[in-house]
Image (cartoon, rainbow, N blue to C red; front, side, top):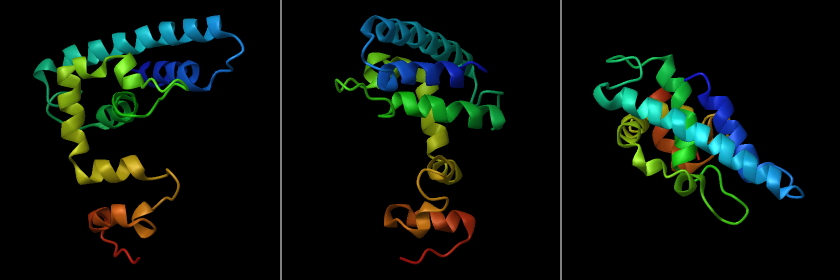
Length: 144
């Protein structure tokens, strides 16, 4: 799964950020990296068919490394200027086992906190009421 980050990032670049003055190149990049993202998602989906976590029964760094990329792709992370979302373009809901795994991980408080750290503020629970419930997870008292 070492290709998940680079391939997802390349897909996102061509889907959202690449200059628009060369549409043939952009279309090629979206198609090429989109197919590779789908191949990697399919591989991980099949792998998780009979496993709770990437490495079996234990939550490991492999889960931590894969989740952010898949979560970005299955939610509203990449949006083409036309409004097309990566999740629908790549049909991310088709990966039943992968979505089960991601839902399971995203239900963990510490994973939720980890997914929001370093977005705009290193401790968002200190500046945004929506994340105050995560303060208890780290033993801090949020004051807003």
